[in-house]
Image (cartoon, rainbow, N blue to C red; front, side, top):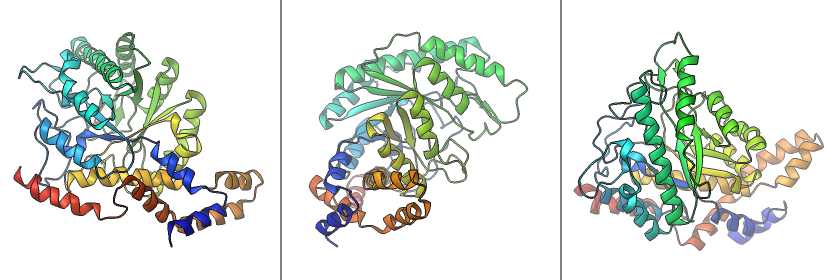
Length: 411
């Protein structure tokens, strides 16, 4: 079937494929830099900690800022649309060779990233790095040690200043996301104490009056991680309430909930009270394993909710790290899958489906929902890619393999 035939078939349902293509082009997804080097960063701070783990030893991992930037730029060339880049604080670049600890980070340590973003004409998002550090042993902002808490509070404030720098320099708000891995392996005797300390630490960080024109603060929960299986200080309830009380955005990470929870179902409830929702797209397999996202039911359901509630109300970023496969292919595949999921949402006859629900015509609703799965959305995707001058199918992998032979194999 050609695009024109697909266009007519969707039109019969009241769906304008041209509008869907235009809308898809306007939805930015923030691509995460840490897939390119297994969350190593440039500090040489040691092994990855904080209840997270990057597995695999596929050859060609980026080892320097130059290598990582080159890989990211190459990945962007294979992805249709205009997107963003998401950085962690551990990706600071110390031009003069004089490294500073995380509580002393400054905008100048990210100057090259801003130059890179300007070259690609993209925005930057940012994350404080509360893991893989000598002072990130089990507890950070919730630590019993006031000196440890003070260190990480200074780090959080430093990151807000860096996020402001990104927003000012690039003319687009920087989403600055706070996540800490604090928790316990076994059942704690005191659940309240650590949460009081976490709240107090955040209160100190957000006393810094960052410019909201340039920074959007998001806070992220987690169910559990490796070594913190029994209790996470920053639970969903903690962050949902803290965000609501302090006018911040509560971020939903698809890998940070129980495997049987449908994350898409949480979106409308948060949006109803906050007006905006931040989202990390990931794929947990039995645990928060951060697999490369596939075009599966969970991702499609989340994308449908994003489209139904206006993509402008969402901050969308990817978050996974798989070192067992070609890292650039993992970035490209994940980004394209998220875009495909968004397109599927844009091609839903939402008015018709809603009308069937309101009329309690559940049989007709179910039939239409199922039949839509075999509609020729692939032709619309191919047309979108053609207009963006990108490969619509797996042909892009040939470019990745050539890059692997020419560039990655030499590392």
